[in-house]
Amino acid sequence: MIFLMPYSDFDFNDKTILITGGAGFVGSNLAFYLQENFPQSHVVVFDCFRSKAIFANGNLQSFGHYKNLIGFKGDVICGNINNKADLALLNDYTFDYIFHQAAISDTRVYDQELVMKTNVNSFHDLLSLAKQNHAVMVYASSAATYGGLPSPQVVGKESPENPYGFSKYLMDQITYRFIDQNPEMSIVGLRYFNVYGSKEYYKAKTSSMVIQLGHQILDGNPPKLFEGSDQILRDFINIEDVIQANILACKPQQSGVYNVGTGNPRSFQDIADILQNGLEANLGTEYFPNPYEGYQMHTQADITKTEECLGFEPKVTLEEGIKTYIPEIRRLHGEPLS
Ligand SMILES: NC(=O)c1ccc[n+]([C@@H]2O[C@H](COP(=O)([O-])OP(=O)(O)OC[C@H]3O[C@@H](n4cnc5c(N)ncnc54)[C@H](O)[C@@H]3O)[C@@H](O)[C@H]2O)c1
Image (cartoon, rainbow, N blue to C red; front, top):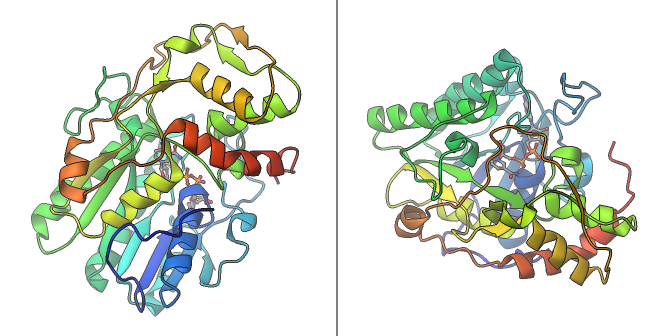
């Protein structure tokens, strides 16, 4: 892990910080970033962790994993954001910052009631908590709010195409209203594009293609890609830059919703090629027909406002990001997912 670099001059020492979803991919990276850089900060992780419960699509209902938190020294509360009694456990603290990452993060969950309840209703509760505590709120929105809109994706023009994208879109609308009604509050929604990097392994089939293709290659198989993958481009963003955005979002020039991508889309073929290079493999590529109708062929975050209002500057190229990730991809190859 490299995060030993404060991305700003804010001092989180002596601050009390809540990270919902802190046993997941982004949340656990944030927890360690704060712990390493601000040893006097008081970080509280709130996460329901994984159980055996699965969605209709066969994926686990929550991906939080204790292994993401080994070495974490702060408080850990096991609780569900849908459960008021669990949320009441947070009343023992007065938070200065809330990083709200907990969500059904699986974009292919079509149980609309469950997605809206988990991702949207709980947001009202957490915003109330932020208001009551005079806390800064930074939460995870998503590029899924854009659906299949052509690139570049710009905040203000959305067209979600699944319940997940719609739930994040609703969170953003709630935010705009809340900012209007509470102009003294600092609230920032971050629309992450395709995040990859350390601590995503336990998301299993919903982890990025970087680790999934890496493990196919380590199995000795050619990476499997949709036909035409050199023409399917995504704005892949390294976890370090996502952490940078979260930290900078604590002191925005203006509350609001911001894209978090590189602005520089790359193809799935690029990922496979960079991985083979890094893993010293030469297995070629296996192509198969893309089964998804209306599949998004190109994403590219417009990050002009993110640069202007947060001071965000993506630092990690896909080549660098994959290179530093390779040892972890190797280490986790074959590791049980449960
Ligand atoms: N990783 C990406 O590429 C990406 C892209 C866009 C947006 N996001 C958003 O960023 C946030 C973090 O995503 P991630 O990749 O770390 O996913 P993740 O699934 O690893 O993390 C989400 C965490 O929330 C927890 N959680 C789920 N339901 C909960 C509930 N009801 N109560 C309490 N905790 C619950 C899970 O256990 C998990 O630890 C999510 O809000 C996600 O929607 C992620």
